[in-house]
Length: 248
Image (tube, rainbow, N blue to C red):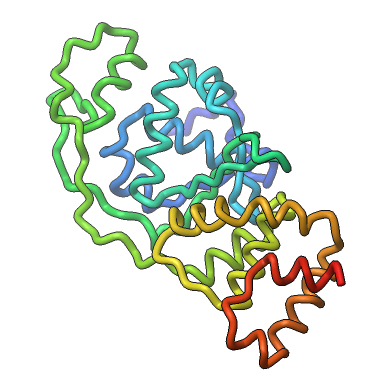
C-alpha cells in the first residue's frame, strides 16, 4: 500500500530562536508546579542569557506574555527560589534604590524536591498550582486552597560564602557592592547565609560609597598594603582604614 505524502513541512531543526529546558524539570517538577508554574519557569528560560543563565524580565512582562496576573507570577518566583530552582538578586542604583530583580537559573544539583502529593482526577496540579490552574482554564476558583503548602524533603544545601562573594558579588553592577565583597574576601570573612551578607553590605554601604569616589586600583592597592603591614594584622581593620590609607 502506497504511503500517503503529507503536504505539511516538519519542524526546522536549525539552531535559531530557541532556548533549552532541563529534562529533570519535566521528569518530576512540572506536575508539582502545574501548567502555570511551568509556563512561568519556561518564560525565565526563554529570557535567560545562554552563558550566565541570568535574566531580568519584569513580573508584569511575564504576566502579559502568559495572560495571567502579576500576583501569580510573584507567587511562583518565590516558590522557585524556595526550592532552589532560581536565585533572585535585587539590583540597586548608586543611591540604593531598587532597580529590578535579576533571576539566575540554578543547576539542577541545587534543586530541592517537593513531597509527592498526587494529582486530581482530571490531571489537576497539586499544591500551590490549584488556584492558578483554575485561572488559566478561565473557570471560577472554588477549590479549597488551605492545603497549598509544598514541603521540601531535602535539607537546604550549605551556603558557600566564598563562592557567593566571588562569583556573584564581585561581578555586581554596583561598584560599592564589589568593593565590600572584595574586602570580605580579603579579611577573609565568613557568613552563614545570603541574608547575613546582605546585612553586612547594608552596614558598610555608607563608607563604600565614599570609596567609589576613588579608582578600584587605588582601593586594591591600599588594601594590599594594609594586609602586608604587621601592625594592621593585629587590628580589626575595615573599609574606613582603606579609605584613610587612600586619602593619605
